[in-house]
Image (cartoon, rainbow, N blue to C red; front, top):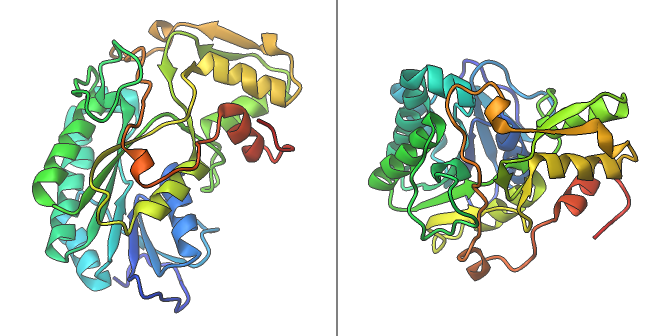
Length: 312
């Protein structure tokens, strides 16, 4: 575990170490930040660590390399593993199905097998794109039927992890927004930057999701990570079904930018290599068993993101 490590203090808690795979990604970095505040926390990165993730130790490991990830997990012996490493690029998954399968399916299977061997609890991050997009407000009890390569590999990852690891929580996330802690800009930050500069932004008006603030994702998973009774599939989405265009108009209003800078377009004209599901809005019927606080609406979540005065 020496090569590619970044430093961490000697912080420890009775709960045992936490490992976040893909900790240098958008969601993974927020999970690392949340857990590092109270737990001995490690994260994997593929090419470069995140400089500002204080209190966590980064290790350069590719989850596709089964022996390497096994060596890391055997050395850390984590109590909880949050598997956020993935290949989420829609077109890249479509054009490189073998690569997508290696990362999303085989990588998840490698991590799940290691988790089971060291008796670690596994939280697998998945996606709303496991659904075909022909309905609204899919629940945990609806049957997945992905229509795209990315969704297909993520569903296969869910099934592979379920076969390998018994103590498993599958968190299917809707479109997740917030600040990027890794040094790059998130999609929403890019939209905000263009609006502040008075530039037009083209956003889909025919693709619906239930966007969730990344801070809420981190809070919920921080609460459920050590809850061994929280198992199976759990949907995490925000309270409102909106299109990216509608989300863009909320951003414009919050930033006092002209709303007509946000231009609606069809996702059919988005340059995708395969059709995208039109409505993957989620509803969670299981979350209330463990979590009572409401998820932030887009106005509240975006206001928090932009450090604006509290809104409802």
